[in-house]
Image (cartoon, helix red, strand yellow):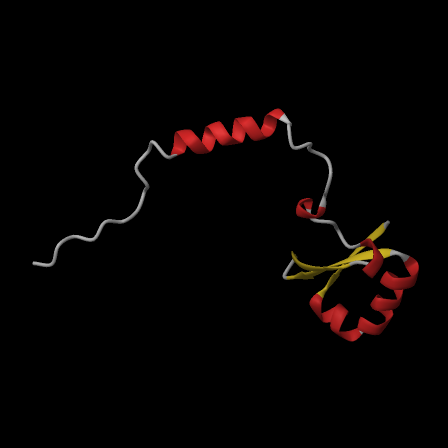
Length: 89
């Protein structure tokens, strides 16, 4: 996918053209403000997937779950780190 970087001012002037480039030209456009990336225009069908959307890559009997259970069990032995209120004077 082609990538292009433009300023916010350019994006405001040419938004319609940019949307066409993204949707039909399969371009990715990074919008910057004072040289820093602020946003990214990408085609709608190529939205990035979140790891939470992945299904079926661990079986229920995977050793990972035993490891996580032991970590959680050992954490309960530690006192929670919370701010304790001091008695009013």
